[in-house]
Amino acid sequence: MKTILIVDDHPDIRNLVRVLLDRHYTIFEADNGVSALELVRRHHPALVVLDVMMPGEIDGLQALKIIKDDPELADIYVIMVTARGQVSDFEFATSLGADAYFIKPFSPLKLVNKIRSVVPA
Image (cartoon, rainbow, N blue to C red; front, top):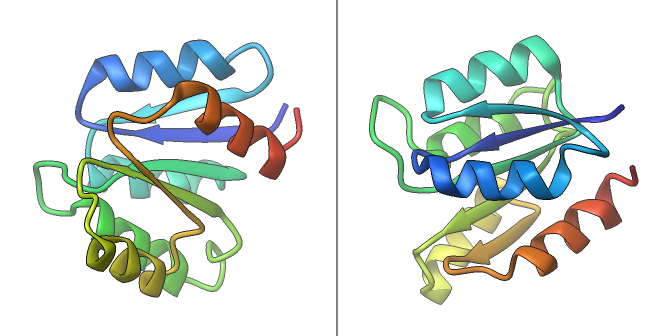
């Protein structure tokens, strides 16, 4: 099974996405940027669902930049999920390498359809 990493500091968001995907993918979860990067390096997931605003040393945008700047990780598809809905937020995330951008509250069905289109089960 292909691997997906879900990164969000809200457990309810992680649980929702996991429940929708776990029959078809191996799912790992992290609640902060540091843990996310450790799991990315260890498991090299096919896709990361990454929250922007998280507490700790590394937020989602910093984690995105680290992933996309690393030649060994840059091929990982990253979907940003965030409450930040300004055009400038989207443009900044895209400039760092975000492959897709969903604004909270997001449609779980649209997110799952996007994931399945990128990483077929």
